[in-house]
Image: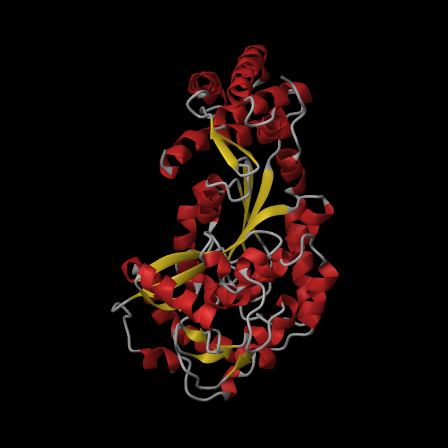
Length: 471
């Protein structure tokens, strides 16, 4: 079955569970914990189509079709209808669905006997895993550190990350360690500086679009990934937490302007580019060129590094660097002597018909769909996942200077929203130009993120807590 068809089958069942949990939290008299667990277990079993044990995936979707249809027939009108669910409309289904679910689960266990232990089946039904998607937006993304910190405090550790642009850099910083360490993150920020990461020099443009600012990601982060200025370090497949990085590509022969145009887009003098405020003034002039790429999807391609075995060999810093290469503003490239990376990059560009890599935010600023596909293909073993998407660059009238770019980025966010289970937007962030914040500003961003997510923690904990055995 195609992934698109699978999504159309499973998504309504996921939406029913989301509505059920939110309603149960809003009205404690709606269901007791056991009744809620019975209905959620039935919905989870109805979504089941593959069970993983070791390297073996066993399909069970066809076997569960009659049960799935029964669950939809009973619960869709109650949970996805025009009126909020009520106890008197839910209770007639609790006892019956428990019996139907127990029978369906036993039939699946019988089918899997000798290949998959019943414990693996129960784990797939009862345990939901967290997937974290981190959108782009320059310095606004630092609020994600607060989110990561609070999630870790509550034992909510992501099994998969997917990031774009600055969200990609923060994603690999998070995924390089099995657990989030706020002290480690602040120490990394303490060692960074604008002058260390960015230089106004003219260099060869091999795979990226030329720009006024050259990003030297290895100079600031290389030692944390075992990478020197001229050597590769951790690959995406080496990261303890699996990670996907969204990167844009300009299709061959379709670059709308000459390369020299992008290199000179921010002007020819370095004096205005040696501090974030100077960059902000110049970026306004570059917005038209970026809008041209946002609004002409036929000239761009979306690539997701780390989504397959081949791109899993991508150097993690190179992946995040290309994802952060804002056309005309930031240039990232692989110019070191690294035959393996050059072969990989050139092969990938040839495969996708791409001439240059660009910032992933121009093609997919919140790669939730890519994360969902990775889960559906078995990347983290289970298919029972909760996708939490963080959008620090969502349009805000309180930041009018950035509103045009925010609205353009929102165009790439919209197709991803159906694949999320919860989208978090933030009332307060750092400025997008604060890509290299001071320790004080980074700490402030961490506080903003924690404060914003605090209201969502009860819901996230309820969704991600293992369901008790009720069948």
